[in-house]
Amino acid sequence: MKLNFPNIEKNQFLNEIGDISRFTARFFREVSKPKQEYREFINQCYWIGYKTLTLVGITAFIMGLVLTIQSRPTLVEFGAESYLPSMVSVSLIREIAPVITALICAGKIGSGMGAELGSMRVTEQIDAMEVSGTNPFKYLVVTRVMAATLMVPVLSSLANAISLYGGYLGVNIRGQVSWHLYWFQVFGVLDFSDMLPSLVKTFFFGFAIGIIGTYKGYNSTKGTEGVGRSATTAVIVASLLVFIIDLIAVQITDILGLT
Amino acid sequence: MEKDLKPVIQVKNVNKSFGENHVLRDFSMEVLPGENLVILGKSGSGKSVLIKCIINLIQPDSGQIIVLDHDINELDQDELDRLRAKVGFLFQSNALYDSMTVRENLEFPLRIHWTKEERAKNAENAVKEALEDVGLAHTVNMMPSELSGGMRKRIALARALILNPSVILYDEPTTGLDPITAREISELMMEVQKKYNATSVIISHDLNCIRITSNRVIMLIDGRCYADDTFENLRLSKDPKIREFFD
Ligand SMILES: Nc1ncnc2c1ncn2[C@@H]1O[C@H](COP(=O)(O)OP(=O)(O)O)[C@@H](O)[C@H]1O
Ligand SMILES: [Mg+2]
Image (cartoon, rainbow over all chains, first blue to last red; front, side):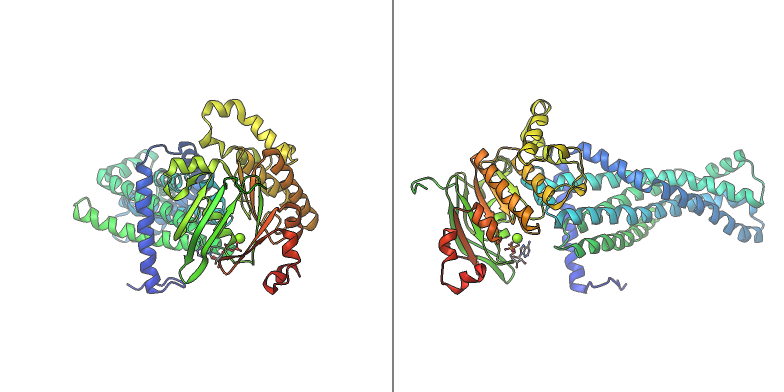
């Protein structure tokens, strides 16, 4: 696989992986020490929800609707139109809703963290925190990573529900399936083995987005253009990681026989 | 200035490099109690690196730094935090927290160094007093982005003063300000210095600021202490390297 990063050569790429690993290790060290910044954590959870909820909701609804409308002709061809709710709901819950949510979060939260911490770095706010006795890694990084790890699964679960609602509408644009029958079919086909892996992987999505966003910002290089670069590379790397984690997750569920 | 006073800050043979860039080479200096020491040097000569070494934001490669009788290399995190509470730092870019109001900015240093009860009882007054010192009591509920450059500098100074430090480090306090505001800030620094009876280390290349504030000037050239004298003596010097700064 050839990774086409802008301005990053192979050697730098490996260095970057080393740096991110050390950053992640530091995260686990700081998280295990006592005294956490709970208030800032709650603030961050609120902000993540506030910034992404509308976008996630609208996108999930449209994805549910569109996927249903587009799947219908194929199923009709095989005379399997009645399977439409079951088929659509499996795709939505297993793959589409979690991944779309994670990508939106990578875009909004990842870039937000990259830009915010980046500008705090270049204007010496992080140094100022350190001087005034507050551990900036704990205050800024740990809280944001934890908030992303918690909120992406919450948002993704919401996206699941909203996309299924979009699916209901999609089914009823041309066909006629009652509200009860739709949900009966959806929950008939969805079981624990669909829900659980899909939920578990969203925690990893959130963690990856948080780590990349804060890493890019926290290590932003001097100068204001560094802040912009932190924000954009945070989005690129976080989105790529979402797909890589998704790929790994599907392999693991496969091996565990949860399919 | 009495010669037998114990120095507040001692920097001994400090070296610091970033890769091939040797910023400080065997640099030494002492700051005596009550003194206003100015460090003068070209942009990029390592003045900020030096002042950040003093509060351990940057760790020197070798050498010793003693602040208020503590070797800062040998302190654990708690001891270092306690020592830093006695040292106010005014950052070149002010470093006000953008996402917080002026009040929250000023209260931030208190959250670690004061207990919850102390904060409930005294924080309000401490914020008020620090803001009155810098003449900006009315800005308490404003955001940093609503303030002008000179006001931000004052708020940053108020935040550096809130824990009543005995040493204040100023990193280019007047750079980027118009001459009138720069003069006001210099005068404010003198008032503050008198009120808190603090020792100051001031990085500057603003001659007006240096004239107003300094008792003594150290010139940092090529990572070394090139000259150490009063402002007047340096101004009259014939040495071309020193003249550069005054012409
Ligand atoms: N964190 C750092 N990493 C690498 N180089 C640095 C760092 N901080 C400062 N430098 C370098 O050290 C030199 C002195 O910087 P500085 O102390 O900021 O200069 P100034 O005297 O203008 O304050 C500059 O060449 C700068 O590039
Ligand atoms: Mg500087």
